[in-house]
Amino acid sequence: MNKFWYIFYNYFLIHKFRFALGLLSLFNLKIRTALKERKDLFKNLSDIISQLDITKKNIWLHSSSVGEFEQAKPIIEKLKGTDKYNIVVSFLSPSGLHSAKRYESADAITYLPFDSKRNVNRFLELVNPIAFIIMRYDFWPNTIWQSYKRNIPIFLVDATMKGNSKRILPLVKNFHVQLFSCFTKILTISDIDRDRFLKFKLENDKVSTVGDTRYDRVFSKSQNALTKKILDEKIIKGKKVLVAGSTWREDEEEFLPAVLKLNQHIDNLLTIIVPHEPTVQTIEQIEYDLKGKVAVIRFSLLNQYKDEKVIIIDSIGILLTLYANADFAFVGGGFKSNIHNVLEPAVYGIPVMFGPKHSNSQEAESLIQIGGGFEVQNKKQLYKIMRRITLDDSFRKESGFAAKKFVETNLGATEKILDALRSYI
Image 1 (spheres, rainbow, N blue to C red):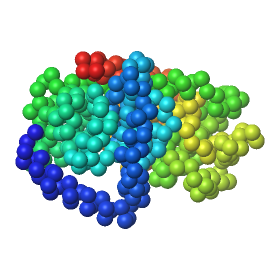
Image 2 (cartoon, one colour):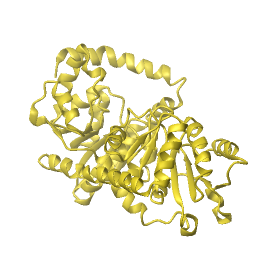
Image 3 (cartoon, rainbow, N blue to C red):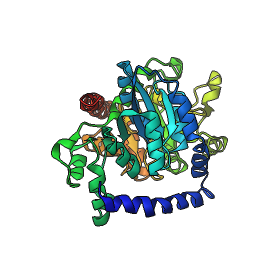
């Protein structure tokens, strides 16, 4: 490791960072919660590790939060299937850690400690991993350096590098050149990402394109969802079903007028709205927007269903299963800041629509290019494409087929990652 960066980080930068965290915790509940819950980190971790099967070796996998952990699950489940390893999972955020508490394939769940040399070494002594897997991008210098010094193989998985990443800035790039050199393998989701990582003076065989485990994960979840019956067949029979998933208020302001207009021309349209945050206030606002214009019912009251045109979902955890009942979908977030998961509807072979703010999703751009996804700028465009999808059966089927083929073509990243791991575990 480069001594300058090591000294700069440990004797200057990390102290500034610790001070900033303390200051920000006064105003940010998420940071305050994370700091509070870390107070007994090592005691709790010691108790958990002591209960692991000592005949198995420990593999440590780190995710920043919920989304990255979803990408990690196919890897974890394949490793657990061998019955050779204990899986220790760490998180940066409270949301990730809390979401994982009921996940049976993880043997130990913990926070990542604050990135001081002392904390990291204490953590490594307890966990004693034979390999360290980092999902996507959440890597911390001392965590990397101390793992490297202990000859622990380090893998960066589902790795991405944006073209405008601040990591490519001259001085910052020099820091990352030496940091990335500590990784055993960097496994990227695309050739573009691979080429960008290679600009950090890495050897060709250290960086490989293997794909994105999100495809494997969403496919696996969809197969499970197909076995569930959320909606009575009588409700959806003979109807064109539109599911709007993970919508925010900004999405609903464009989506609802388009749906109301579409209902004036399509008699058999059933719209299912799944708010990202199904609070009472959110649901009541949607009901108010539609009042007197179209019949609405809440999901929790479906035992009283009388052919209402709109169903509002007032529960959580069923969106993927609802997409399985859809003929086409609108994915929220694109009129707010970042689009939500477009793969969840695409896996079922249905056209996918979304707003213009989708730069966070390479999949959305790919779906547009192959004709399986449609970007809309406003309610007028949304109505136009929804009307075509609803009335033109051939167009809808062709778009849906393109979306499904896109997902199926990108399956298999998990096996490629495991192939890369096998030489080291």
